[in-house]
Each structure stands twice: as structure tokens, then as C-alpha cells.
Image (cartoon, rainbow, N blue to C red; front, side, top):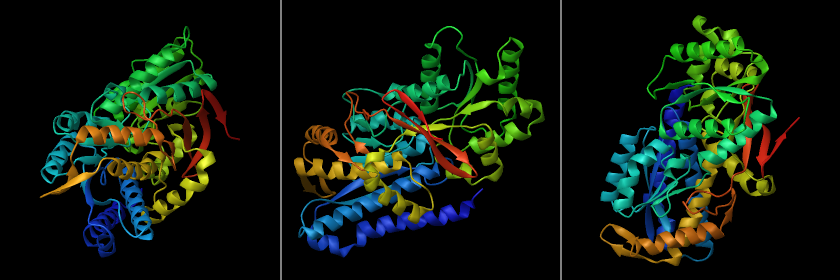
Length: 427
């Protein structure tokens, strides 16, 4: 596994660069005094740090571009002062952060990454006129029209369409789910189960195993999964038609260690020719590829992970930003992180549509409802490096195309796509 101390240093560097840029960039102040506060709720340490670190870098790069554009146009427009909070995937920390940011006059927040965090802060955001733009929350239970929560990714029902279509393509008839007990992963489990069972007779979903977010020892989990697989085989199911569906975050590393080494789990039962399928919470995880043992296990069981896809037709736009983020963080960004780059430009345009007023806390929104309407309008009209940001009636990204990523030789490789209901597997 990569040295966690390296990531701590990296995080400090990114956050200090953020603060230094927002508070000390004199060139921006020379051209405009309209500096608007943006809160950033991201996981920078612990499970899920990959997306959090890349989100900070993506926003930093977007701000640099916005500033450069303003300078070239001789000033004007809004600049952004970022207030970054490390929530560590912890809903209580997310709530504390939004309450603190509210006191500072922050009315727009990018993040948090998980549905559990979004669910925790939603009542506060709705009650205090705070616009929340999450790049990673997928739980369909949060798809609510008219609230202050907007999400830059498709919800779990669309992801279920993609992963179940791949399972069907692979001839899977029985799945044994293993999933983390939180809002996002519970939503994925429920949507996958409903979609898979809707395929009809002969397609079954076992009870599986749900583990708590605090779990570090996965012995019980992998033993239970192995037993359920054996039961299916004893009942006549062919091994090639049985798969494990894992909805998780970076604890996937510990899951795979357990699956390989736990004598009670019968490692052979959990490996070849077994198929494992994953979720967006693990796709492109640096924690997985940074652990040689876990990465080798992932490669041995195929383990494709869906994530909403970056359009090949826009590669000339998103590739340079992706490369710059990776150069700064050492982590290849996914579409979730890159969507926050697009989001900042939409926010800027919405602010221009609805002018903010100055108060003792800085510039603030004179009319929150008007700004929210402007944000939706600008998002619907905007096509950025991740494609169209058009939102559905619940304020979630309407695009439902996905890429599949799998670990090959300790590296994430794009192995296929799900576009317009069609599966394509790359040779």
C-alpha cells in the first residue's frame, strides 16, 4: 500500500495552496474585489481520500482558469475563496462543517462525497438556504425535487442498469451481495437487487452480507459469502453463473485480503472461476492498486467497477485537466472529480446571472431562490469537459452512460462501456 504519510503531505500541500491562492493572490484582487466564498466538503484522509484529493485539485485548477480568463478580459466576474473541510466520510463531521461554514457566510458547498453525509446535512442545507453540489452521492432515496441538493452524477438506479447489464452479458444468474452499511452502498445494493431480479426466472439474489462502516476484520463477511456460494452450488448452480457483488469504498483492500487468506472462507470458492463485480466507490481507487496483494486478487476475479463515463468525443478537453490533476496528486482522477471542475464554471455563470450583494461577511446571495433557478438553468445549458451537466427533475445528473474499470497488473484499465443501454467490451 502507498505510504499514507505521502498522502498527508500531499493533502497539506493542496489545502495550503488553496488557502494561499484564495487569501493571498494579489493579482486577482487587482482585477476584481468580488470574491465569493465556496465551502468544500471532501474526504482527504482515511477511506475515500482518492476522490477528495482529486476534487481539491480539480477545483484549484478551475479557479486558476477562471482567474486567468478574468485577467485576460481586464477584470470583472467573480473569484472564489475556498473553505476546505476534511469530513473523512463521517456524516457527523459533515454536519459540523456545514454549520461552521454557515457562520462564515458560506452559501454554496461542493461535496460531500457520500450519500450518508449528504443525507445528514440535507435538513440543515434546506433550512438555511445553502446550495449543496455533491460530486459522489448516488443514493436514489435522495432524489428529491425542489430541495437544495444537487448531484453531478447519476443516481444508483442508473448505475444498477449498467452493472446488471454487464452481469447479464457475462451469463451471471446468481449474485451474492457484500456491501457497506451506509446510504450510498445500501442504495446500490437495493437497486442492483431489484434490477437483477427483474430479469426473471432463474435469476436470484442471495441474502449476502452487510458490514458496518467501522469493520476492519472481514473474516465473518468472507466466510458467510463463501458458505452462500457453496449452498448455491449444492443446489445445482454452475460456478460460472455465480457472482459476488461488492458495494464498498477503500476497505475493499481488507475485504480482498480476507477473501484470499481466511481459511474459513475457502479462498478457492471466492476465486477462480468466480466473478466479482464492484461499484463506483472503488473505481480508480489508489488504495486498491497501491496494495499488491489486494490488486492481484482483484485481477484474478476480474472485478469490473462501473463509474459514470467520460465522453471519448471530449477527450481533447478532459485529458489535459486529468493529466494536470494526476501530476499534482499522483492519483488518476475519475469523472466524479472532474465534474467539480465543470461545476465551478456553472456556479460562476449563475452568479453573473443573479448578482450577489456585499455584506459584512463578504458577497452573498441577495435572492437564494433566484440563484438556485439560475444554477439549474446554467447547468442544463452547460457542456463541459465531462459532457452535458443537464439535470433531471430531482437535480441529479441526467446522463446515465458508464465506463467499466478493472485492475490489471496493479493498474486501473478501462475495459468496457455502457452507452445508451448497450454493453461494449474492449479486447
